[in-house]
Length: 328
Image 1 (cartoon, rainbow, N blue to C red):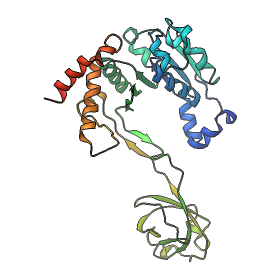
Image 2 (tube, rainbow, N blue to C red):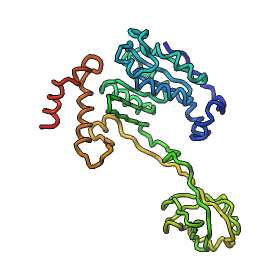
Image 3 (cartoon, rainbow, N blue to C red):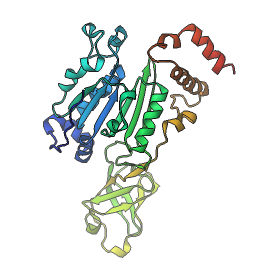
Image 4 (spheres, rainbow, N blue to C red):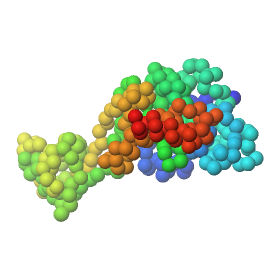
Protein backbone atom coordinates (compact mmCIF):
# COMPACT_ATOMS: atom_id res chain seq x y z
CA UNK A 1 0.00 0.00 0.00
CA UNK A 2 2.84 2.33 -0.84
CA UNK A 3 3.12 4.91 -3.58
CA UNK A 4 6.11 6.03 -5.62
CA UNK A 5 8.44 8.34 -3.71
CA UNK A 6 9.22 11.75 -5.16
CA UNK A 7 12.83 12.94 -5.30
CA UNK A 8 12.55 16.66 -6.04
CA UNK A 9 15.02 19.01 -4.34
CA UNK A 10 12.63 21.74 -3.25
CA UNK A 11 13.71 25.04 -1.73
CA UNK A 12 13.53 25.32 2.04
CA UNK A 13 10.26 26.91 3.17
CA UNK A 14 11.54 29.51 5.64
CA UNK A 15 8.06 30.22 6.98
CA UNK A 16 7.66 26.57 7.99
CA UNK A 17 11.23 25.74 8.98
CA UNK A 18 12.60 29.07 10.24
CA UNK A 19 13.43 27.87 13.77
CA UNK A 20 14.77 24.50 12.64
CA UNK A 21 16.77 26.19 9.89
CA UNK A 22 18.41 28.47 12.44
CA UNK A 23 19.41 25.52 14.64
CA UNK A 24 20.51 23.04 11.94
CA UNK A 25 21.62 25.29 9.10
CA UNK A 26 20.85 25.01 5.38
CA UNK A 27 23.35 22.23 4.65
CA UNK A 28 21.85 19.92 7.28
CA UNK A 29 18.32 20.79 6.17
CA UNK A 30 19.14 19.86 2.57
CA UNK A 31 20.71 16.56 3.64
CA UNK A 32 17.66 15.84 5.79
CA UNK A 33 15.39 16.52 2.84
CA UNK A 34 16.95 13.63 0.88
CA UNK A 35 16.05 10.91 3.39
CA UNK A 36 13.41 8.20 2.93
CA UNK A 37 12.53 6.77 6.35
CA UNK A 38 10.81 3.49 7.23
CA UNK A 39 9.30 3.27 10.72
CA UNK A 40 8.18 -0.17 11.84
CA UNK A 41 5.13 -0.33 14.15
CA UNK A 42 2.84 2.56 15.04
CA UNK A 43 2.66 2.21 18.81
CA UNK A 44 3.33 5.04 21.24
CA UNK A 45 7.05 5.28 20.51
CA UNK A 46 6.71 4.65 16.78
CA UNK A 47 4.12 7.38 16.29
CA UNK A 48 6.17 9.89 18.31
CA UNK A 49 9.17 9.20 16.07
CA UNK A 50 7.01 9.44 12.94
CA UNK A 51 5.51 12.75 14.06
CA UNK A 52 8.92 14.29 14.74
CA UNK A 53 10.44 13.07 11.47
CA UNK A 54 7.51 14.34 9.40
CA UNK A 55 7.78 17.75 11.08
CA UNK A 56 11.54 17.76 10.47
CA UNK A 57 10.95 17.62 6.71
CA UNK A 58 12.45 14.47 5.24
CA UNK A 59 11.59 13.39 1.71
CA UNK A 60 9.24 10.57 2.73
CA UNK A 61 8.08 8.50 5.69
CA UNK A 62 6.60 5.01 5.46
CA UNK A 63 4.81 3.70 8.55
CA UNK A 64 4.70 -0.10 8.50
CA UNK A 65 2.45 -2.00 10.91
CA UNK A 66 0.44 -5.22 10.95
CA UNK A 67 -1.08 -4.70 14.40
CA UNK A 68 -4.65 -3.64 15.09
CA UNK A 69 -5.47 -1.08 17.75
CA UNK A 70 -6.13 -2.36 21.28
CA UNK A 71 -7.12 -0.64 24.53
CA UNK A 72 -3.47 -0.78 25.59
CA UNK A 73 -2.48 1.41 22.63
CA UNK A 74 -4.78 4.21 23.76
CA UNK A 75 -2.54 4.84 26.77
CA UNK A 76 0.40 6.00 24.63
CA UNK A 77 -0.65 6.40 20.98
CA UNK A 78 -2.24 9.85 20.83
CA UNK A 79 -3.48 9.53 17.23
CA UNK A 80 -5.78 6.63 18.14
CA UNK A 81 -9.19 6.61 19.81
CA UNK A 82 -11.73 4.02 20.96
CA UNK A 83 -13.30 4.17 17.50
CA UNK A 84 -10.05 2.75 16.08
CA UNK A 85 -10.01 -0.41 18.21
CA UNK A 86 -9.70 -3.42 15.92
CA UNK A 87 -8.35 -1.33 13.03
CA UNK A 88 -4.76 -1.16 11.79
CA UNK A 89 -2.78 1.36 13.83
CA UNK A 90 -0.79 2.77 10.91
CA UNK A 91 -3.84 3.24 8.69
CA UNK A 92 -5.70 5.02 11.49
CA UNK A 93 -2.76 7.42 11.97
CA UNK A 94 -2.05 8.15 8.30
CA UNK A 95 -4.16 11.25 7.66
CA UNK A 96 -3.09 12.94 10.90
CA UNK A 97 0.57 12.43 10.00
CA UNK A 98 0.02 13.76 6.49
CA UNK A 99 -1.62 16.89 7.89
CA UNK A 100 1.58 17.80 9.75
CA UNK A 101 3.67 18.68 6.70
CA UNK A 102 2.61 19.01 3.06
CA UNK A 103 6.23 18.69 1.90
CA UNK A 104 6.64 15.14 3.22
CA UNK A 105 5.25 12.10 1.42
CA UNK A 106 3.68 9.82 4.06
CA UNK A 107 2.87 6.21 3.15
CA UNK A 108 1.52 3.20 5.01
CA UNK A 109 2.36 -0.48 4.60
CA UNK A 110 0.47 -3.31 6.30
CA UNK A 111 2.93 -6.01 5.26
CA UNK A 112 4.96 -7.89 7.85
CA UNK A 113 8.74 -7.57 7.74
CA UNK A 114 9.09 -11.22 6.79
CA UNK A 115 6.91 -10.71 3.69
CA UNK A 116 9.08 -7.88 2.34
CA UNK A 117 11.98 -8.48 -0.03
CA UNK A 118 15.45 -7.05 0.42
CA UNK A 119 14.82 -4.84 -2.61
CA UNK A 120 11.90 -3.26 -0.79
CA UNK A 121 14.12 -2.16 2.09
CA UNK A 122 16.82 -0.77 -0.23
CA UNK A 123 14.57 2.16 -1.20
CA UNK A 124 15.02 3.62 2.30
CA UNK A 125 17.97 5.58 3.66
CA UNK A 126 16.99 5.06 7.31
CA UNK A 127 15.05 2.24 8.99
CA UNK A 128 13.64 2.61 12.51
CA UNK A 129 12.43 -0.45 14.42
CA UNK A 130 10.13 -0.41 17.44
CA UNK A 131 8.28 -3.28 19.14
CA UNK A 132 10.32 -5.87 17.22
CA UNK A 133 11.74 -9.14 18.50
CA UNK A 134 15.47 -9.74 18.71
CA UNK A 135 15.69 -11.92 15.60
CA UNK A 136 13.96 -9.24 13.52
CA UNK A 137 16.29 -6.57 14.86
CA UNK A 138 19.45 -8.59 14.14
CA UNK A 139 18.33 -9.50 10.63
CA UNK A 140 17.36 -5.94 9.76
CA UNK A 141 20.57 -4.53 11.21
CA UNK A 142 22.71 -6.83 9.07
CA UNK A 143 20.70 -5.92 5.96
CA UNK A 144 21.15 -2.21 6.74
CA UNK A 145 24.90 -2.57 7.25
CA UNK A 146 25.33 -4.37 3.93
CA UNK A 147 23.32 -1.73 2.05
CA UNK A 148 24.61 1.37 3.87
CA UNK A 149 21.23 2.18 5.43
CA UNK A 150 21.05 3.96 8.79
CA UNK A 151 19.57 1.60 11.40
CA UNK A 152 17.83 2.80 14.57
CA UNK A 153 16.10 0.64 17.17
CA UNK A 154 14.14 1.89 20.17
CA UNK A 155 11.86 0.51 22.87
CA UNK A 156 10.06 1.91 25.91
CA UNK A 157 8.56 -0.13 28.75
CA UNK A 158 7.39 1.97 31.68
CA UNK A 159 10.40 3.82 33.11
CA UNK A 160 12.83 1.68 31.09
CA UNK A 161 13.96 2.61 27.60
CA UNK A 162 16.73 1.74 25.19
CA UNK A 163 18.02 2.99 21.87
CA UNK A 164 20.54 1.59 19.41
CA UNK A 165 21.97 3.42 16.40
CA UNK A 166 24.13 1.97 13.64
CA UNK A 167 25.11 4.27 10.79
CA UNK A 168 26.84 1.53 8.84
CA UNK A 169 30.16 -0.19 8.31
CA UNK A 170 31.85 2.86 6.79
CA UNK A 171 33.03 5.73 9.03
CA UNK A 172 30.17 8.17 9.64
CA UNK A 173 30.97 11.87 9.15
CA UNK A 174 29.97 14.19 12.00
CA UNK A 175 29.71 17.85 11.00
CA UNK A 176 28.85 19.19 14.45
CA UNK A 177 30.32 17.27 17.38
CA UNK A 178 28.28 18.87 20.17
CA UNK A 179 25.36 20.83 18.69
CA UNK A 180 26.37 23.92 20.66
CA UNK A 181 26.58 27.44 19.25
CA UNK A 182 30.01 28.54 18.06
CA UNK A 183 32.14 29.98 20.87
CA UNK A 184 33.94 33.29 20.45
CA UNK A 185 35.99 35.73 22.54
CA UNK A 186 37.11 39.35 22.28
CA UNK A 187 40.85 39.87 22.05
CA UNK A 188 42.91 42.23 24.20
CA UNK A 189 46.38 41.53 22.78
CA UNK A 190 48.34 39.33 20.37
CA UNK A 191 52.10 39.06 20.88
CA UNK A 192 54.65 38.41 18.08
CA UNK A 193 55.08 34.95 19.60
CA UNK A 194 51.42 34.28 18.89
CA UNK A 195 50.17 34.49 22.48
CA UNK A 196 46.55 35.67 22.37
CA UNK A 197 45.15 37.34 25.50
CA UNK A 198 41.39 37.66 25.80
CA UNK A 199 39.74 40.91 26.87
CA UNK A 200 38.89 41.74 30.49
CA UNK A 201 38.43 38.93 32.97
CA UNK A 202 36.80 36.71 30.36
CA UNK A 203 37.90 33.08 30.20
CA UNK A 204 38.46 31.59 26.80
CA UNK A 205 36.42 28.41 26.08
CA UNK A 206 38.93 26.74 23.76
CA UNK A 207 40.91 23.53 24.18
CA UNK A 208 44.15 22.21 22.72
CA UNK A 209 43.70 21.43 19.04
CA UNK A 210 40.65 23.65 18.50
CA UNK A 211 40.55 25.77 15.34
CA UNK A 212 39.68 29.48 15.58
CA UNK A 213 38.93 32.08 12.92
CA UNK A 214 40.03 35.69 13.45
CA UNK A 215 38.27 38.83 12.36
CA UNK A 216 38.37 42.62 13.07
CA UNK A 217 42.05 42.59 14.07
CA UNK A 218 43.72 45.97 13.58
CA UNK A 219 47.46 45.83 12.89
CA UNK A 220 47.37 42.13 12.09
CA UNK A 221 44.94 42.27 9.21
CA UNK A 222 46.68 39.38 7.48
CA UNK A 223 45.27 37.12 10.23
CA UNK A 224 41.68 38.18 9.60
CA UNK A 225 39.62 35.35 8.08
CA UNK A 226 42.56 33.06 8.80
CA UNK A 227 42.08 29.75 10.61
CA UNK A 228 44.67 28.78 13.24
CA UNK A 229 45.04 25.77 15.51
CA UNK A 230 45.38 26.80 19.16
CA UNK A 231 47.24 25.53 22.20
CA UNK A 232 45.75 26.29 25.60
CA UNK A 233 48.10 28.21 27.94
CA UNK A 234 45.82 29.33 30.79
CA UNK A 235 42.25 30.49 31.30
CA UNK A 236 42.97 33.90 29.72
CA UNK A 237 45.54 33.01 27.05
CA UNK A 238 46.09 30.63 24.17
CA UNK A 239 48.78 30.28 21.53
CA UNK A 240 48.46 30.24 17.74
CA UNK A 241 52.19 29.74 17.10
CA UNK A 242 54.91 32.28 16.29
CA UNK A 243 53.66 35.00 13.91
CA UNK A 244 56.68 37.34 14.04
CA UNK A 245 57.75 36.39 10.51
CA UNK A 246 54.35 37.44 9.12
CA UNK A 247 54.94 41.10 9.93
CA UNK A 248 52.58 43.63 11.44
CA UNK A 249 51.95 44.57 15.04
CA UNK A 250 48.78 44.22 17.07
CA UNK A 251 47.07 47.55 17.70
CA UNK A 252 43.54 46.86 18.86
CA UNK A 253 40.33 44.88 18.47
CA UNK A 254 39.80 41.40 17.23
CA UNK A 255 37.48 38.44 17.75
CA UNK A 256 38.44 34.76 17.74
CA UNK A 257 35.63 32.39 16.84
CA UNK A 258 35.53 28.60 17.01
CA UNK A 259 35.54 26.65 13.74
CA UNK A 260 34.03 23.21 14.13
CA UNK A 261 35.92 20.43 12.40
CA UNK A 262 34.44 17.36 10.81
CA UNK A 263 35.09 14.08 12.57
CA UNK A 264 34.18 10.45 11.98
CA UNK A 265 32.54 7.79 14.12
CA UNK A 266 32.62 4.01 13.81
CA UNK A 267 29.61 1.86 14.70
CA UNK A 268 29.33 -1.73 15.86
CA UNK A 269 26.58 -4.06 14.73
CA UNK A 270 23.66 -4.90 17.00
CA UNK A 271 24.95 -8.43 17.44
CA UNK A 272 28.33 -7.12 18.62
CA UNK A 273 26.72 -4.71 21.08
CA UNK A 274 24.46 -7.39 22.52
CA UNK A 275 27.51 -9.42 23.52
CA UNK A 276 29.39 -6.35 24.80
CA UNK A 277 26.73 -3.75 25.65
CA UNK A 278 27.48 -0.13 26.53
CA UNK A 279 24.70 0.88 28.94
CA UNK A 280 24.49 4.50 30.07
CA UNK A 281 23.32 4.93 33.66
CA UNK A 282 22.71 8.07 35.69
CA UNK A 283 24.84 6.77 38.56
CA UNK A 284 28.15 5.46 37.30
CA UNK A 285 28.99 3.93 40.68
CA UNK A 286 25.84 1.80 40.73
CA UNK A 287 27.07 -1.39 39.09
CA UNK A 288 23.95 -3.39 39.93
CA UNK A 289 21.57 -1.00 38.20
CA UNK A 290 23.60 -1.28 35.01
CA UNK A 291 23.80 -5.06 35.26
CA UNK A 292 20.14 -5.64 36.11
CA UNK A 293 18.99 -3.23 33.38
CA UNK A 294 20.95 -5.18 30.79
CA UNK A 295 19.59 -8.49 32.05
CA UNK A 296 16.05 -7.06 32.07
CA UNK A 297 16.19 -6.27 28.36
CA UNK A 298 17.78 -9.62 27.62
CA UNK A 299 14.95 -11.33 29.51
CA UNK A 300 12.27 -9.32 27.75
CA UNK A 301 13.76 -10.05 24.34
CA UNK A 302 13.13 -13.75 24.90
CA UNK A 303 9.38 -13.20 25.31
CA UNK A 304 6.99 -12.81 22.40
CA UNK A 305 5.97 -9.15 22.53
CA UNK A 306 2.38 -9.84 21.56
CA UNK A 307 1.49 -13.17 23.18
CA UNK A 308 3.72 -13.33 26.26
CA UNK A 309 3.82 -9.63 27.17
CA UNK A 310 1.86 -10.08 30.39
CA UNK A 311 3.65 -13.32 31.22
CA UNK A 312 7.01 -11.57 30.96
CA UNK A 313 6.03 -9.28 33.84
CA UNK A 314 4.25 -11.87 35.99
CA UNK A 315 5.38 -12.89 39.47
CA UNK A 316 6.34 -16.26 38.00
CA UNK A 317 8.71 -14.60 35.55
CA UNK A 318 10.02 -12.31 38.29
CA UNK A 319 11.02 -15.29 40.41
CA UNK A 320 12.59 -17.03 37.42
CA UNK A 321 14.45 -13.84 36.47
CA UNK A 322 15.88 -13.47 39.97
CA UNK A 323 16.94 -17.11 40.08
CA UNK A 324 18.65 -16.99 36.71
CA UNK A 325 20.28 -13.56 36.82
CA UNK A 326 20.83 -12.57 40.45
CA UNK A 327 21.53 -15.82 42.22
CA UNK A 328 23.71 -17.50 39.61
